Image (cartoon, rainbow, N blue to C red; front, top):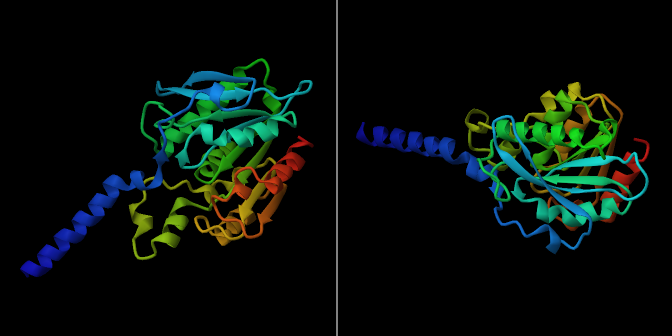
Length: 268
């Protein structure tokens, strides 16, 4: 009886620990943010905006070349690093006249607060509101770009505030499905607090959708991405990059990805 009681106690303690610390296993924010003038891209503007719950977040706005009206890409990055890591991506698109808004979530790049699903949704809404307030941004030509975890943020925002288009890089059906794939012996469905269930929101998306994924993604299996893609009912395009893994250069700023994005946004 004592052994059984000890076993139960240890199991309960283990799952309680997972419940309390799970966000440390989901979010990997980098607080260190080099100055914008060291990024090697001219014409960037440092801005801040306030969220509905009173946090002030930092971001960088890169105006596109060419005459207005210009399309603006609102970027929601993945679960690691910060906006400085996305500079090469922004630079390539800017050369083709696309305006790029690189923002950071709460807890990232020196921002106050701690990341949660609801917190990131609040941050995304604040970022969109800021963009819509700018005189040099055409409100009808804002496209959301989500990368990995950021696809969950982008899909939720798109289901609530329709963009001109939605681009998802390495998206997933839900964090529950991804967690269950990597930890099949754990009751992930019962433990996860932040779920980012994009598949439940896919039917509410009515804008054109572009999905880009690596065929050999070891973080978000390609079958998971295909399931989400199938759930979208609007005009959609799937680009699978052969041999590409989740963090390969091909999925950061590779030629196929950039060309696919430019093809997608031109009609918009």
